[in-house]
Length: 445
Ligand code: PHE
Ligand code: NA
Image (cartoon, rainbow, N blue to C red; front, side, top):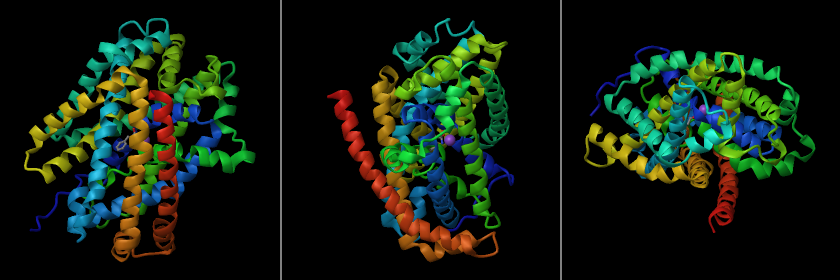
């Protein structure tokens, strides 16, 4: 049966929703701390290369699947005549399930930082404050609060409210980051931070690039919301008159710009606060600790901090919303359950699954590395193989829609999707699995 499909209410609606999904904790929390952990500028360089060479083409893969099928990831393959590929959608839903379980924990930290900003600050000792935030009852309760908010948004189906929130959030985040970056530039030792962040040692590029490939690829997928079907779902409501290439470039540029800007804030602060960047810069808490320290010292810092954390919470909520949507669609399409009970049940299960990560940062790393560096990459690999080797002629036709047919770029794109993306991602998965086993052995055994 062909029911005419509802489309985005406004021309900008799709971009706003996709940007709302992309911009989140990945840009402002995960990107800077991973950069600090992975050697600084060289990581930034590899990440940027991967965003352009792999991220953009894979985003187009998802857009083509979504718009062509007018379905979410699970229905999409059936609709395109290849129902056996549904397992790729299932892997994506599983990735979302794992990611949301700890994304919500970090979202909960942000909620606690909002409260603290407006009720007297971060206790004078930003490091201690972070430890208290990220452990025990505080972390579990705020995790529950964040999951509750996400589930509420999904259950109510208030997509338009979210589009409006993204419209305010993105420019506000940019303005706040620019102000903070300007303040950071005045700090003593800022240049040490910039040096570490922006000046790569290219003489060791080849060997460094291999060792950070899994982390950089995982971050490229995570930050662009790729590999789990979010972008398939969002583009399934797109009209044929839209230029997919144009839209994907806008989304990638905004997301990348915000991540780079976040680094320009965090690194001068870390350097001037005496954090030893060469030895990894402090892990998952570093960004929160350095920002709270900065807000404690800057003029009107608690107000700026409060606004900053509110915008970060909105960014995190719109990303988490997009993840839960995919997981809920998977469950309602696969089993015979309604949307609201599915949303509530899944939110409860995801909350419970995330509890270990609220009590121990090693678990958070374990979930995060598994979901990003392995599951998202495998998801992107499968989608690319499908488009490159099973569905290429139709995919090209779809990419040409709204752009007056195929051109040189389209030939480049399908070649990259057929050859480059699968080879790079296969190698990445191999490295990531080896690294993950070492991580588990080193951390838990
Ligand atoms: N892109 C989001 C961020 O950067 C996280 C995300 C990952 C959202 C995967 C959807 C899917 O915070
Ligand atoms: Na992002």
